[in-house]
Image (cartoon, rainbow, N blue to C red):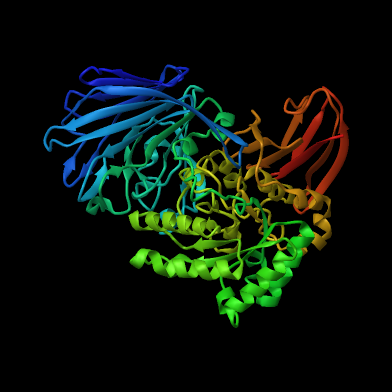
Amino acid sequence: MQRKSTSPAAHCQLQSPKGAVVGDITINERGRLQYAVTFHGRTVIAASDLGVTIDGHDLGQGVSFGDAAQADRFETYPTRGVHGEAVHEGRELQLPVIHSASGRAYTVQARAYEDGFALRYIIPGAGPTTVQGESTSWQLPAAAKAWMFERNNEWKLKSYAGEWIAVTTDALHHVSSQGSIQGTPLVVELPEALGYAVICEAALYAYSGMRLEAAGGGIVKAHFTEGTNGFRLVGDVTTPWRVTMLAKDLNGLVNSDLLTNLNPPPDPTLFADTAYIRPGRSVWRWWSRGTGNFQEEKAMVEHAEALGYEFTTVDEGWELWEDKWRALKELTDYAGGKNVGVFVWKRSTELNHPQDEYRVMREFMDQVKAAGVAGFKIDFIDCEDLGSIAFEIAALRMAAERKLMVNFHGISKPTGESRTYPNEISREGIRGLELNRMSEGPITASHNAALPFTRFLAGHGDYTPIGFSNRGPTTYAHQLATGILFTSPLQVIAEHPEYLLHEPSCRPALDIIRALPTVWHETIVLPESRIGELAVMARRLDDTWYLAVLNGTDEPIALAWESLPFLNQEASCLAVCLSDAGPAAFLREERLIRPRESGLRANLLPCGGYVAVFRPT
């Protein structure tokens, strides 16, 4: 339903369909375009600047409004990861804006949902224009707790592989030795139990990736790799969505579809056939023993078959094999006979050559496709400038044309693009278990307990979970729980399969490791959860429920549930429970859960974990 309304000269308001979220777009007394957001009647984003600077003109200063139009939006679509179906229900505003000094007319497009507010700029153009930055900002509540990722070296904003820590919003500009620029998502615990706000972006196409410049006083502002030099675009400029995700609790955050809702659906021609896009588990030799020679990687195929896994990932080094293309074809043929797909690694700098419409990348993709691979892992992008984003989208498009999946590594955050390009089966942009191999490591338990409520809010992440032999300060049960709580349709397991299959201490968990889901029909965050301290989720695939817990603290934690409301209260089920019997040992218990009864208890060691699987009897 669309309706046209004449806006007051300096104010336009957009409410979500049920009224939980209200966005006000205004022109202040100085002629500055601004906005503010309320959630359940309380201010969460105070008056904050808007605008884009193009060819030296700040299009947010000295403006007037035209006539606004609103329309309701509703759709459902299949999704993968947190749950099986996304619901897109919101209200959209088209607000014409005229910049007086340049005479340039453009549109602010805004959407209000029950779980957030988003806006972007659509600026008509013809020839080349230079985007020199944005005034887009967020005035956050003073001294609220903010969760950010920190990495005190130059890699912080290259690979987004920082440790998640909490600071106050008014300290964001000086907390890091790397300066005042922070990555997204930025997660804020709102004061007075109002809930949570997450600052991020959606639908990043044909634009530079947004970071956040902390300016002090709780203000963060859009910032770009190119700085004031800007980046050049041709034709119309459509920015990504500038997003404020909102929820009363952690369950609402984790189940938000806001970022994918803000992305367009997949091209029906490019994705007419999606049978090749297969979620699943992958074995991986690199983490434990390094990439193997041909025979050693062939053995990994046999291990994948033994575990019932769908894929093997062959990392850096395979291109040094003798007659690599013949060897790769032999490997994929052998794997195909065992119903195992093969992913191969490739360094991005060897593909990212835009000349002749990325001819080098097209030729490489043709070769790997002819060799029979299922997909490839593109690594070391290490930037989110305009050229890097253009490369990523070109890679996804060209891979889709050849029916190949893509797993990006050494990359920035997701922005919901996996809806538009479902062949993006996962991406890194996360501080994952490979850090346990490095001098910066090992990964802390608190980081793991923060991830489900921070980085994973932006989308899937290839953390490469479950590493028993190099687990850092965590326990076996903690490591097992990461494989359930960390969402990735392609779950690349860090531990060597020989260790999983033959190490006696792993035996109590082997059946769960073999059956590990990578997509879920339903996810419920239990109320005990606290960011960085305790992550507790129930996740369902078909009629089987998984309960997983991560202790992020250095203290033991005891949990007890008199009932488990996510279970069918009218039927019995068999529960298989794995808890800490020590840092490197599982305690396994099997018990019958009767209707309306539970009495389940979990005792977690410091930095420990817990997993229970409930199957109907």
